[in-house]
Length: 271
Image 1 (cartoon, rainbow, N blue to C red):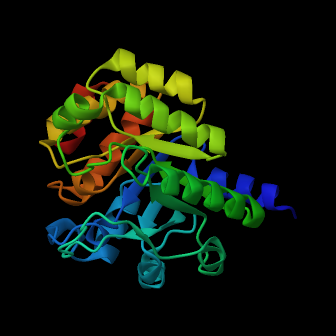
Image 2: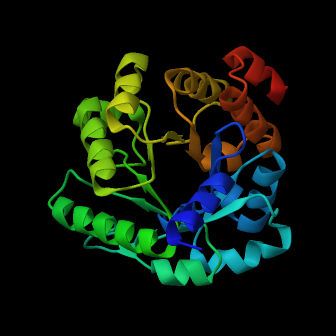
């Protein structure tokens, strides 16, 4: 069996029969020194998201073995690659890549997730890192997913759009496509027209990132717009794990992408 066959098998786990990908990101403690209550217990958070219909869980390599007792056989496992030295006095946003593709394959992962920064002075290094991991994923038949998002990923969408503009997301997504990435996730641009342009320009399956925690009805309305624009799913952490009912929230998100229900119908699922 070739590596390309292996990648196809794994893509079929990551995307369900409706061609929808719902990734729960249970890896936020790898990026922030703040303790997020919804991800204090990663195993429980992943279990609830899978019960709600998540097709993938995105976790650090050390958590893969811990999640095994609750892992559903149809749910894909994604190895989140970086950790950030959040207490560093020099550079708390330095991205330290902690795993290899071979190691991820040995741990049973279906793919890898890596955020990128194509804006700062380390943009060249980020491009080289993406190119390296794409080559390795092709070799081992794993799926490479890149978070082609705003560099300051814990700022609000309004602040990021004012600073970087939708054009940055178009550039970041297209570079990923040119380098051979399989799937990207990105931020909503607060504008359906520019977000649809990104999807058309990138020519890859595009997922919407969850971003900062926002009110649940506001979040579902945003997801509804991106689903109508052509997004194939989402990569969401705190807006699932810190929801009042993570199972219902995951289910509502899934219905927005799978059946294109309205935002009001999705909100009623929470009720």
